[in-house]
Image (spheres, rainbow, N blue to C red):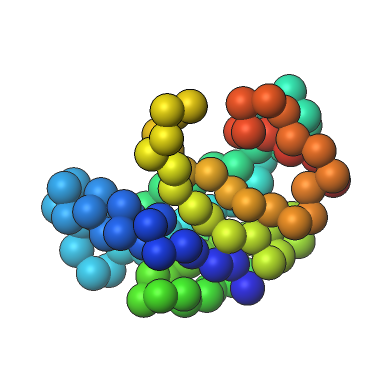
Length: 108
């Protein structure tokens, strides 16, 4: 399962509304090679399911990921911060053994 915090849910819904995306769009999250720790998160809205996708729903938000990325994202929570150190979405990933100081990449 991939989870979404309450504040991340609010921000995702506002972002969907601002960009005019309809109910057919879902949140696609994935893990790609790159970043200073070796792996990076990727997140976007999508409306085209792919073969082999894993599909979840938390707090009314449909979350889709490919099977390989799910191995890295199991039990991860998407959160949002609006603090002084920067605004934006971030992943609270219990599977990551280390992450870079910017928080955008991780390693297992």
